[in-house]
Length: 96
Image (cartoon, rainbow, N blue to C red):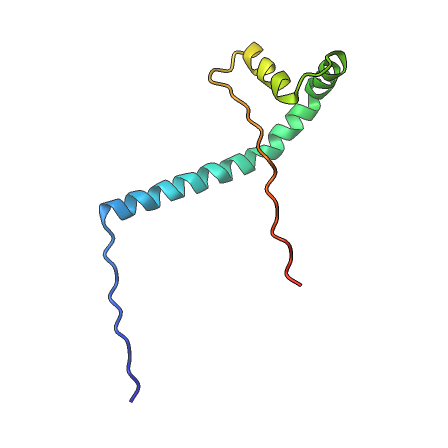
């Protein structure tokens, strides 16, 4: 005879459901951002935003892209606008 394991199902608590709901909300938000990303790209390319930023870069010396974007956000009246730059994530080298 083979021993058969008996597994008991975990009864989900309110906290488990809340955690699951938060995870689902985050996934929904990420999916929504992806859905509108291409639409936003097309709108930006259709405007003169890119050429305006390039003109600003050309006319100012020694100013970072972050400073330009922050100034644009402030001029546009975007509240609590902050841009940060992080180091690119390094990929793990492939195993040989």
